View 1 (cartoon, helix red, strand yellow):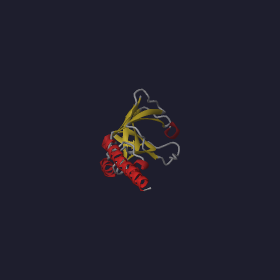
View 2 (cartoon, helix red, strand yellow):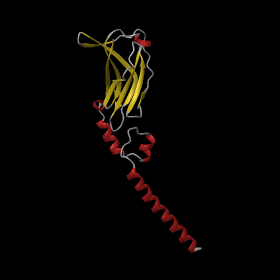
View 3 (cartoon, one colour):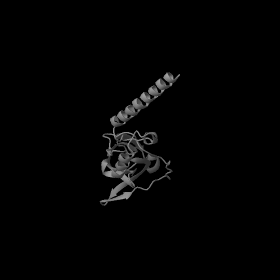
View 4 (cartoon, one colour):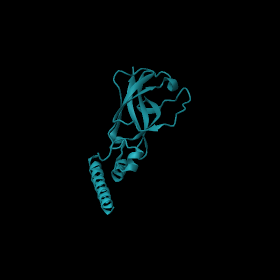
Length: 168
């Protein structure tokens, strides 16, 4: 009876030691901070919390760009390429604004229809994302001129990232 007890204790100790080294080795092989971090990764310890907090503090609009996708501009819509090179991706709103350049100054384009934005703030989940926007519903077709479209970007504060384009 004592022999069985000793064998069981030894097996349990071996399992615990093996488990400890397995988990320790697994954690050291995980990239420090994936761009898109889930709550589960934070809770489970898969992501180092201190590194994550540091990366959040370092988030910057300077690491985000918004450009027009070639040959997609119409008077009613366009496709934009959003690039986020932060260690942890920023969050974005589906809310956007269109501004027109008049006399060298940017002026907010007034919507022809009331805009009711869904309260959507999301991390896009990839470094480069395509965003197709049909603004004709709110702004109508744009006339010839220079414009810029701004999308809200949430780093440590609310900011706007812009892409300039021209309607010919």
